[in-house]
Image (cartoon, rainbow, N blue to C red; front, side, top):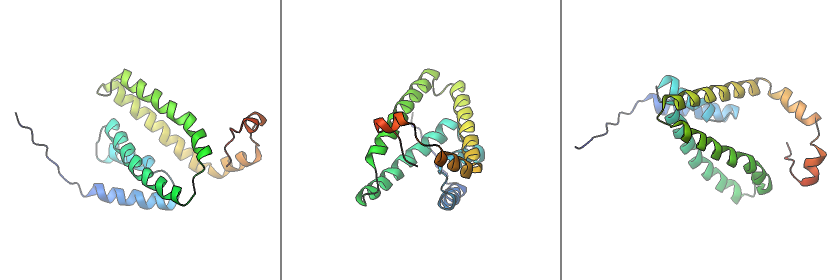
Length: 155
């Protein structure tokens, strides 16, 4: 049995990518918080597919950006390592959780949609209260414990 995969180019996809790129350039908001909901809501992609596609694209573009910034000496690897201490284990635990839920299962799609919705609401709230959050962070010094161990990340 031979299966032919049909590929139809929807002209709205590259146009959406262009619009998201412009918005990212103007606002600094991450493209995933804009493109992922577009893929799900406007184009009807499954949430797991939209998130996975966004992550693959982000990995490729961020790798290129990291290389350029490293060549110009713009990366503080100590801070990068400290940030990775939280994000890498969290990503691994999330993958384990999704594997337990079964990615093809309807429950996993619902879970991804719920987490995606929460992340988007959190992003919107942080943008709305950005100046207040920055002012609060500047007024509150890092804990002496963190400073003593070199764990504080400067703003």
